[in-house]
Structures are given as C-alpha cells and as structure tokens.
Length: 297
Ligand code: NLE
Ligand code: FE2
Image (cartoon, rainbow, N blue to C red; front, side, top):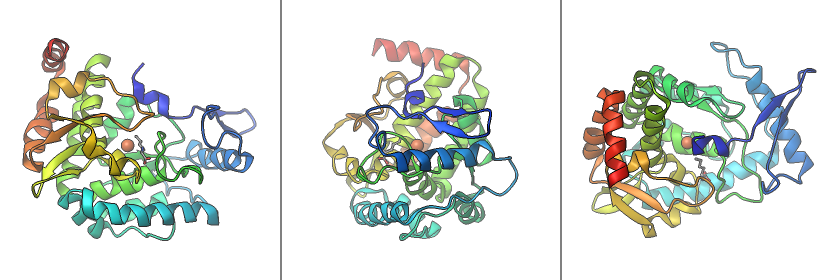
C-alpha cells in the first residue's frame, strides 16, 4: 500500500452516529482523553459533510487556537528566511489570521477569488484518486483538527496547520495553484494504480517537500517543510538531488521522519517545465517508461 495511507489515523463511524479516530500508541495525543475527544468531534464534522454545502464550523478551544498562534508566529519568521519568494508573496496575498485557527470555509472564501481553490473537510484518509483528482476542479481535501499541543514543531500527520499554512498559502499563488491543478489532471488521466502512485510520489517530492534555488539560495516551496518549524531548520542539510521525474516517482520515503532526500528545481520555471509538463500530458505508457528508468537509475 502506498505510504501516504499510513499517516492518516483511521476513522470508524459507529452505528449510533458517533465517530472514533484510532490513534497509534506512539501518537502524542494517545493517552490524552481530552485530545481524543476533540479528534472524534472534529472528525464527525467531516463525516457528516455534504458536498456543496458550507463547511461545518469547528469550535476550537483556547488551547487549540494557542497552538496555531505559536506555530504561526514561529513559521512566519522562518518563512522569511527559507521559503521561496513566490510563496512569501502568496502568504501576503492570502492574509491568513495569525492569532486563531481559521475555519476551512473561511480559507476557501479567501482563496477562491485568488486562484479558484476551495477547501473540503476530510475526516481521514481520502483515496488517492479522489484526493488528487479533485485538485483538477480546484478542490482541496483538508483535515480540520490540530496537532497535539506537546508537539508543535512537527507532526507526521497532516493537520490544519499543515493543510492551511503549508498548502493554502501555496494555493494562493497562481503559479503553484496551476501546478496543483495539473497534478489533479494527471491523477485523473492515468488508469493504473501503479501510474497513479508514481504521479502522487512526484507530488510528494515537489508540492509536499520540494526545494528550489531561489535568489541564489536553497529555499522550500513544499507544504510539508513550510508547515514544520522543526523540519524547516533542517532541510538544507539533507541529501539534495537534482529534479528528476524518474527518481522522484520511484524513491521510497518515510512520512514519519524529517525527509532526508529532497529534490531541487533550478527555478520555478524549471519546475513548471519538468513537473508541470509531465502532469499536463503524462499517460500510463509514459509513466511506465519512467518507472523502468527509475528502477535502473
Ligand atoms: N511534518 C509536517 C508538519 O509538521 O507540519 C506535516 C506533513 C504532512 C505530510
Ligand atoms: Fe500535504
């Protein structure tokens, strides 16, 4: 099974309408009953969500808003140093609140006039084909809960900080948003699961964990780096490889740790040419050729 599946806590919907999020024993919130109850309540909002209707409001606690405020403040400082200029411009364009968690409805209301993207709530794992496919329609599946207050620096599980500070800021850029849409079109075009997995790994190594040369510096544009104020301090010391489709689509990664292999584009135009060009036109046959190439390399 594709690795990405592992980082979503499974959600069980009970007959009585309650929802139970399964956390691993190693999860920082595992032994915290208050956190467990919050996760269940927030997952229930997404389980009951009807597409096309307003996203249910998550009534966040003071402590949850505080986690957002701390992480948001730390990240804002680090983005100035480590995020690409395009991402930084998009941050200003979107104008997310720094002192409280914005509702997903609000995030979509800010984004839509800029790039047409809207958010939809996800209780847990969304099948790859749906998650990526609807990007082509300008829809982004997003978790709504926040990481445990004991681990603000980093979480392997995508949470509202990752989805919004990482992805929504990027989606406020016309150029990055166009790449997300192309990834969605590619996910819809390929037929085999193998090709879909390849497309999604290229997404992982670019829009999730991509870095590029920007203004003569190595900077991040991937949402997974930009939402972790622990990892953002470390990525420049990782094994940085040149942008290479065959390698990205076939390289193994472990989502539970800081990413030790990263792929660097020479510029945003380079990323658009290579990765955007691939997503724009790839089919199963082209992907199979790249997989064979990646296995040899
Ligand atoms: N590690 C990221 C963070 O702490 O924000 C989340 C990554 C989700 C793929
Ligand atoms: Fe993500």
